[in-house]
Each structure stands twice: as C-alpha cells, then as structure tokens.
Length: 221
Image 1 (tube, rainbow, N blue to C red):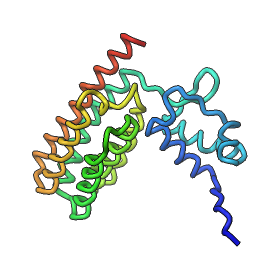
Image 2 (spheres, rainbow, N blue to C red):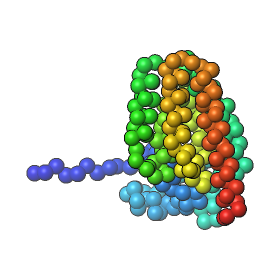
Image 3 (cartoon, one colour):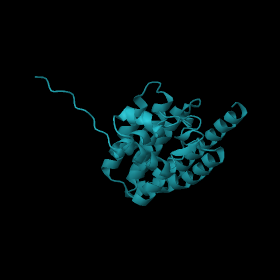
Image 4 (spheres, rainbow, N blue to C red):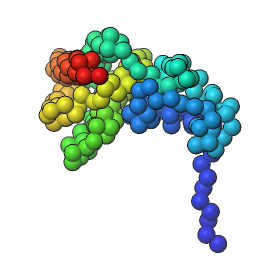
C-alpha cells in the first residue's frame, strides 16, 4: 500500500515562525489584518496556538492594533530612517568583526550565497529582499558575536517592506551584488578597515534610496 502523505501538525511555535517569515519577506503586506478564526482554519488548529503566535508577533512589533484587530505593522517614515541610521553603525561594526573573526566555512557560505544571487535572472522584489537578508545574516554570523547578531536581527524586523525593497530601484540590484562581492573579498582578506567602509557605503546607499521611496509614497499616496 502506498504511504499516506505526512500531515503537517502545527503548534503555536510553528505558526509563529511561518507567519513571521511571511511578514519579513513581504508575503503579508503592511496593514494586512490577521484574524484568529481565519488562521485557525488555515493551519487546522484551535484558536489557542494561533492566539499564542499572534501574541509573540505583537511582542516582536511585527503586528500592531488596527481598527478591526491585529494587523501587520506599518512603519512610519521617521521610524524607517531611525532604523537605517542605527543599522549603518552596526553593519559597519559587524563587517569589521567578520573580517577579524571569520573562519573558512563563513567565507565559503558568503561566496556561495553571492554566486547564487548573481545567477538569478530578473528576480522579483520579494526574492531580492529575501536573498539580500540571507546574505547579510551570513555576514553577521561570520563576526561570531551573538550579541551584535541578535541586535541586527531585532533591528531589521522594523523594516517591513516600506513601500518595497530598495533593490528594485533602477540598477541597485546589480550594484548591491558588486558591493557584496567587494565585502566578501575584504572579509576573506581580513581587511577590517575596508570591510567597515564597504558595509557603511552599502547601507548609506540603501538609506538614500529609501528616503527617495518614502518621498514618492508621500507625494503619490
């Protein structure tokens, strides 16, 4: 007899991680309402684990109270710029520490992610955002500084697709990949100064583009 397909069993933890991933990658857009009943039906569970997952997402500031209940957090322009200002400082520091503390497997992972991204053909906005975040997370891990890594992970949860990835503006995707390549080279060479400068300039460019997107969204709501 054929083996019956395995049924995925969801609990509060798995629901939390699935919804969190959908929010961070833009599958669930800002201001999207999340209803307990609908989510219970989707995951085939009672409302209790759903309620637990939503509580954790609200604690992470990924959800906020809307007019009709919880919805995906929509960052204000001021919040977005503040996050970029702090992230520039932390990205510079983590890049320098990665240049100092990395091991061979860290560089292999970074090179592998970079090769994967360069091989993509006209990726959509969500793919660009997700792969870019994975690359940056690998840089953070290469620093072998759990405190700094945790701070950056928490900080990036505030940048919830507002209004879309800067990597889809003009030729920014190709430019960002070139910058990633130079950053990997600096890390591999143990060049802390160059790694710091490259990471800083990289994030400054992203901040500048984000300001432009925010201006456009305000001018053309």
